[in-house]
Length: 254
Ligand code: SAH
Image (cartoon, rainbow, N blue to C red; front, side, top):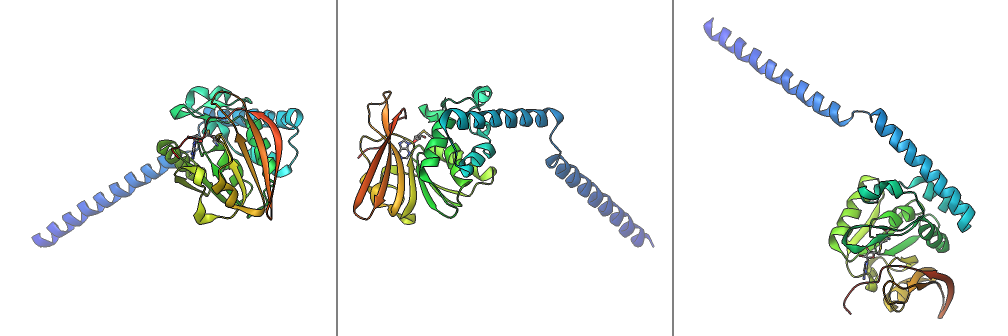
């Protein structure tokens, strides 16, 4: 009898422990799925409104007209890619500092360069200079094959984590983008977001026949460069001057 009571007592303790564990787990889960507070919802709504205004200006002042690009610019939460101290300027048409002396490009340059690539769903696009990851996210709204190379490791890793958190399936690597990404070549489109002194020959050779590349070329840093649209057709390379731009320099020893 006594033994049965001890067993019963132990069972009761086990039951209590199990119930407590379930309750603890439940409350932990409940914390994870807490709906956003009213303040958070209001902030997100304000960002969405600011983004809409930004897109209106891209259409009016910059002539952005590709519906896919417009939709991409409407969707990507630029405020997630800027440093906290620049949140108020996230939807201004301006480049902003990010870590390691680099910059996130202005929305108008991102939209203009993206439009020039004329991406179709399924196209392979290579970006040189992941930076904040913003441009990569815009590309990922247009095609599911985005590859992005960054030379500064902490920047590349941070951008890769953010892109993953936001659900963008961008393939990233830390490397000198001057040499492209031979493993996934040839590309339908290449976008270079840091300025080299000349068009890197490896990028030209990794561009598909019929492919398009946008690249700012020139120096020295701090001065204007020229944005070029480079189109490859057989042995022919056609370059079109898209006007002056300002980018950080393409880094690397070579
Ligand atoms: N596309 C980025 C803009 C980043 S600024 C964005 O949307 O935020 C340019 C980026 O190019 C910087 O992060 C810089 O570190 C990177 N970069 C410079 N030289 C590079 C190189 N040789 N290879 C790859 N990335 C490079």
